[in-house]
Length: 419
Ligand code: EPZ
Image (cartoon, rainbow, N blue to C red; front, side, top):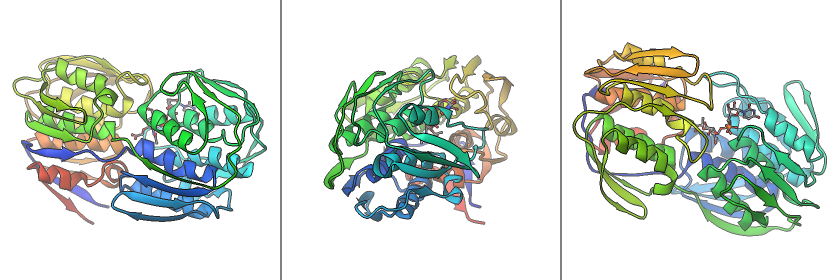
């Protein structure tokens, strides 16, 4: 298992190009199964998770070629509505395949996803929605066996769910009646998925809002479409956090500022300056002390849970006591003990973290436990005095494209140790 060796404290400088969004690419890739066709999807980040999704689409019968972050996906010969455990257990997002398989084949056998490092992550919202749409859903030997032609109905999500919203949307091909989703997720990745599904032939009203209407459609014939994935707002947020924690100046390219507004505003509240910005880039600068700020995560456009660990790392070096409350996941805190090993002063009580800023962090051996926890440890290692070894980097490889070469390009002393 690979690890990163990072020498701190480090400054960063220069320009970073933000990659395509992992959480937009994954549903869009698998949506291609829902309708036979030839799809050219560009700005797809080359990650462990996107490579896993390619394997899943090939198991279903798709033919994929990739070069320079562009995938050519031919799903005209898909013929196998089964997603196996040994693949689904490695990536929860594989469960997105259920909607497309029901659209295309009116049947599916999809392994229940495993939990992940921070605990069980249920899929009950997905299953209840498909049952409401007319599917018969049974659990057999750890597999969800779903059968039936899906129909329009009213789906009301009591809790906003990115995955369940996306899965239901991808189940809406060949509907004979209107489907309405209330309390749909509004994350930019769902909006990008909706734009892709419209190109695939769906008619969707309310895109970008909590209330979506999908109209009856006949989507059996083969199509040919192109799409470019939006930039990754969480990668952008992570590099903003790197700029703050190292008190540096950075230019970010390929960003959508409206997608990161809450995160950017929070960093501005603690002292970040925007020196220059264009439609898809900005130059930011941080100097002086990191001001403390309480943050509570929320669904979009609130502060994203996927930036909670990275923000916590920054607050470890703030000028006082701050609270971080995660209202999306009650137990996404496996990075806390590792930050404490680096000298952070943090207390955890249920889903609320109290952080007392310290003057400095000190290098230590730490271990990634999930994707964003790994990002948080790398950020802390940039500021820590000495050489920090961050192990189990495979977690980070799931969601950050070329992370060490991007950091090296900004002046960080980082190397990947393969073992
Ligand atoms: C997506 O996960 C993202 N993953 C996650 O990003 C992100 O943290 C999450 O949305 C929240 O924004 C992808 O897009 C691939 P949810 P998802 O359904 O869809 C509960 C990353 O770091 N819930 O919006 O699984 C759930 O436990 C990853 O890139 C149910 O109870 O999240 C959570 O508490 C990590 N039953 C809340 O809802 C369900 O059936 C929101 O989850 C589904 C979800």
